[in-house]
Image: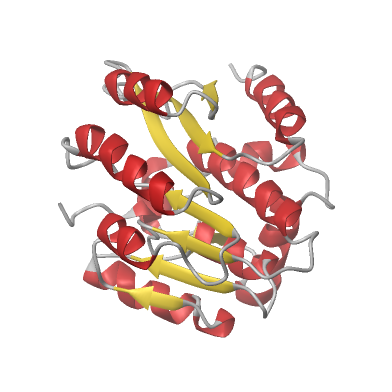
Amino acid sequence: MLSYQHLYHAGNLADVQKHSVLAWTLDYLIQKDKPLTYMETHAGRGLYDLSSAEAIKTGEAEKGIELCAKWFTPSHPYSRAIAKTKAERGQSAYPGSPLIAGHTLRETDTIHLCELHPQEHAALDYATSPFGAHVYAEDGLAKAVSILPPTPRRGLLLIDPSYEVKTDYETIPRVIGQIARKWNVGLIYLWYPILTDAPHRIMLNTLRQDHPDALVHEVRFPPAREGHRMVGSGLFMINAPFGIEGELKRLTQRFSTLK
C-alpha cells in the first residue's frame, strides 16, 4: 500500500491535466479577498526533479509537461507555478500539486496535506515548509472527514490516490458522500486514471448518481510506453467554479492533438 512513489511519473500527461485544472481553479478562488482552505488526501512529495534517474527511467515527463508546456501561456496559473518552482529549485524542478497550491495561494490561506509514505512525507514536509503547510502522516480520507468543515470554510479538497489499493474504487464514493454532506460549499476534486480495463467505470457511475450536478472531465492520450495500461485520466468535480467549462474545453482540444 505504501510502495507508490510519484517521482517515476511526475510531469506526465495525467499531471498536465490535473495540475493545470488545479492551478486554474485556485487562481479563480483567490480573486475574492476571503481566505480559503486547500486540502490534499494523497499529497506525494510535492517537488520533483525531472532529471532524476527515476524520472528519466520512465520518460513520462518527456512525453508530458516537456512536450505540453507550450500549450499554456506564460500568464496561465500553471505556467506561473512551474516558473516559480524552476526559479527557486532549478530548471529540472517540477511542482506537484502542493507546490502549485503554495505558489498560488496567499498568506491568509490555509494548507492541509496528507501523505502516508514515510520517505514521501519527509520530502513533502521539507518542500512545503516555506508555505506554512500543515503536513500529516495520516490517512488522507479519514483526516479530511475529521477536519471538515474547515476554517476558513471556503476552499478545495483534492483527492488523488494512486489506486494501488483496489478497494479505493469502492471506498471513495462513500467517503466523498460523507465529505460533501459535511462541507456542502467545498470544491471537491477527485482524480482517477483511465486504464485499458477501465476499473474506474463503476466508481464513476456511482459518483454521477450521487452527485448529478458534478462536472466530469476526461482526456485520452497515448500510453507512455508499450504495454503501459494508462491511456487517459479524469477529474470528477463537485461545486466546480463558474467559467471552468471553457478551460476544460481548451484542454480537451490540446489533448486531442496528441498522437
